[in-house]
Amino acid sequence: MISWYSLNQKTIDPNLVRYYAQRAKEYEKIYEKPERQADLGRIKDWLQSELAQKTIIEIACGTGYWTQYISLAAKSILATDINPDVLEIAKSKQYAQENVQFGLHDIYALAEIQGSFNAFFGGFIWSHIPLQDLDAFIAEANKRVMAGGKIVFIDNLYVEGSSSPITGQDEYGNTYQERILIDGSKHNILKNFPTKDFIKATVEPHADRLQLILLNYFWLLSYERKG
Image 1: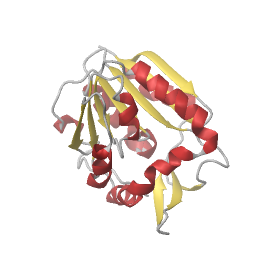
Image 2: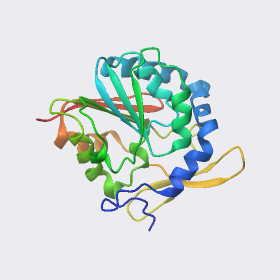
Image 3: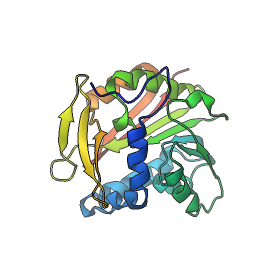
Image 4: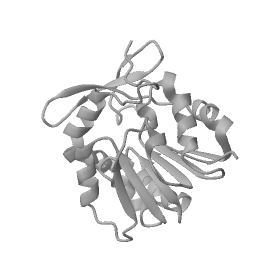
């Protein structure tokens, strides 16, 4: 069994943190794939529309790639990550609206984050959450926004020839990829690729006005928290 998250301990897998720390300076190269450019353009426009004038808590913001685009339309963003290496890169970006603050926070300790928010954004983090813990995580995410607040996730679809191959699966159905960084280091990373029906079934108990869009390489989810 491979399990990297305990709801009781509220901690993220240190191997995942270390992987993203080592990947920090090369992280945004993933967004340079030519075949994905049309999708990425649509996502940027969609996020700005969905999160316009919102007071947002962003989890796992990484290098701030998506933060920089969302900030152009948002009222304010608290962008959080557990990894100081990626946060330093995020902080170094230019935010013309001067509406972004940063915090060092674990995604499994959301209750400890101070502030009132009417929107929640998680980019490419759903896929790293173990299936056995996903329902509890989604429930906690919903608690971070007021009733009627907006919850937004974006993540990868699995596309043969473009996605890294799946190299393993555990007893819960979680799938894994071997990631190789520029320095040659190899990392076994939990990466799930949920179906449309699975995504809907997971959030429907919490959701009003659910919107789920499947692009060629990514899926986009938006809904309002039930009162």
